[in-house]
Image 1 (cartoon, rainbow, N blue to C red):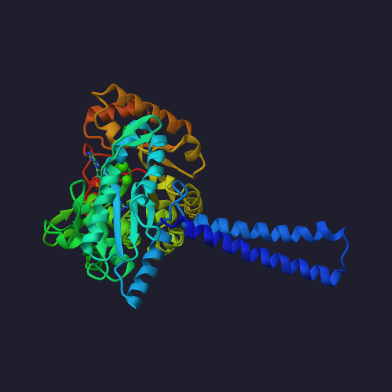
Image 2: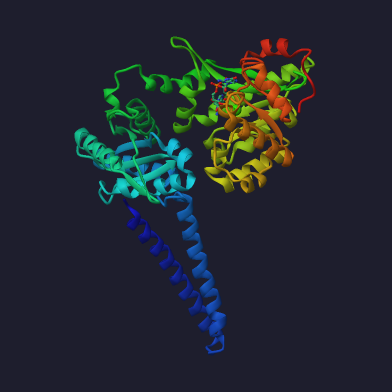
Length: 486
Ligand code: C2E
Ligand code: CA
Ligand code: CA
C-alpha cells in the first residue's frame, strides 16, 4: 500500500503553505515596522493561510479516497493505473490490474447489519495490503469491490501468484465485533500489454476475468474459454450504436380500479446470436466499464421519445427510468436530463427516476445535491427495491422523494408469509405517513393485489397485471385503463 506516499504529499503541501505564511509575515514586518502588539495581527493571516492549506490538502485527500475505508478511490486508482502505463510505455514494465469482489457480502450485510458489513469492508484493505509491496496500490472502487495495481510485475505467473495469495489471505476468517466471518472473493487479472494498453480496457478485462472466475478459481483473461462474457460486454457499445438495445414498459397500476398510472422502462438487449439478454447480465458491467452513462442516456432517449408519442396519441402516461450508482456520481446528469426533455419536448412531470437506497448511500451528499437539481427540474423520484437497503428514515426524509417501491421479495409471497406481510404493511404505513406514493412490485396474483389494496397501497406492478411489453403493445393495453398520472 502507498499510504506513506500520500502522507508525504500532505506534508509537502502543508510545508508550501508555511513558506507562504513566512513570506506574508516578512512583508508585514518590513512595511509596518515591528511592534510586539502587531504579533496577533500578523499571526492571524499566517494561521489562516496555514489552515486554508490544510483544508485544501484535506479536501484533496477526501476527493481521492474512500470515506469508509480510507483507501484510494476509483479516481485515484485510475490515475495510478494511467501513470503506471505511461511509465511502462516509456521505460518498459508490466502493470497489472486486479479487480476483486466479495461473493457473500450482501448475505453478511443482510443477516448481521450494515455495521458489521462496514467493519468487514474496513478490514479488507489491510488484509490485501499485507501481501503487496509498498509501491502497489489497493483501492476500493465501491460497494464490495476492490482493485489492486501492481505497477510492474515481472511476468504473468508472478501476477497470478499474487492474486492467489490475496485470495488465500482473504479466506482467513475476519473477526468483526465478536463474530468470525468467512468471506469468499472472486478475482480477475489483466496485464499490460497483452490484455490492453489503456486504463479502461485493462479495468474492463480484469472485471470480465473476475466475472468469469466468480467464486471458483483464478483466471487470467487470456484463459477465458467458456461462453464468453467479455464478448458480450465488449460488444455493448456497438450494440447501442446498432440499435440492439430495446426498451420495454411495464405498467404501474391502481390497485383498486386497475387503471394505469405510469410505466417503468426496462432495458433489453436483443442480441443477434444470443437472443434476448436481460439487464442483470449487462447493466452491472456497463457500470464498471464506463458505459452506464451512454446506456442510461440511450434508455432515457427511447423512453422520452415513446412518452412523446403516447402523449400525442392522447395517452397521458408518465415513464420511470432506472438509474445506477454511477449515474448519481455524474455531476452532468441533471443537465443531460434537462437537454433530453427539451429534445423530445416532454414535460419534466412525465419523467420519474428510480434509484435504490444503496445507490444513494454510495455518496449521500452528492446524491442529495444531484437529486435536488433533478427535482428542481420537475422530475419525480422513486426509491426502488425499498426494504432491501439500510438507509435510515432520516436520510430518506432529506431527499426530495415522491414514491417508494416495496421490493418484490416482500410482496410476491406476502399472502403466505406473515413476516413479509408485516414488512409490507409497515412500509405502506411509513410511506403514507411521509406523504409518499407507495408502489408494490412483484404482484403476481389477485390475492396479493387484494391484500395490498386493503392495506392502503396505492399502486402495484407485476406479472398479475402485465409483463413488460413494447411501446405500441403497451398503448393498446393501457387504452381505456389510463387515469391521469399519479
Ligand atoms: P427493477 O428496477 O426492480 O425492475 C423490476 C424487475 O422485476 C424487472 O426485471 C421486471 O421484469 C421484473 N418483474 C416485474 N414484475 C414481476 C413479477 O411479478 N414477478 C417477478 N418475479 N419479477 C417481476 P428486469 O427487466 O429483468 O430488470 C431487472 C433489473 O435490472 C431492474 O430491477 C433494474 O434494477 C435493472 N434495470 C432494468 N432496466 C434498466 C435500465 O434501463 N437501467 C438501469 N440502470 N437498470 C435497469
Ligand atoms: Ca426499477
Ligand atoms: Ca425494483
